[in-house]
Image 1 (cartoon, rainbow, N blue to C red):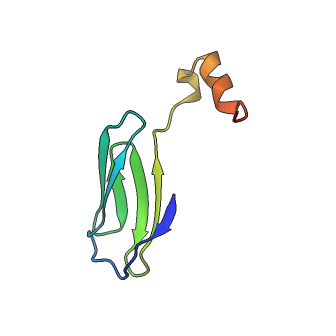
Image 2: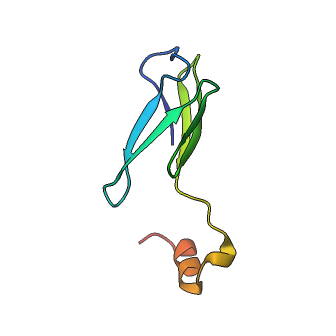
Image 3: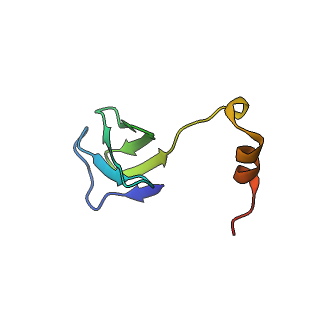
Length: 79
């Protein structure tokens, strides 16, 4: 997800994201003073001068750890 904060510049370390996962569990991610965003199942960056944020949600999964059915589901077209 890419977005811009409503106000820029942003105070270094001054970004906190509160997200609900698909199960409704709250996830909190924060930016450090270098602009790296981290939290459970969350990673990204913020440019404090412009307020531009790029963030990804989810976890990397090794292909070797997936079942055939899981691999098929990942490549199936959306319905």
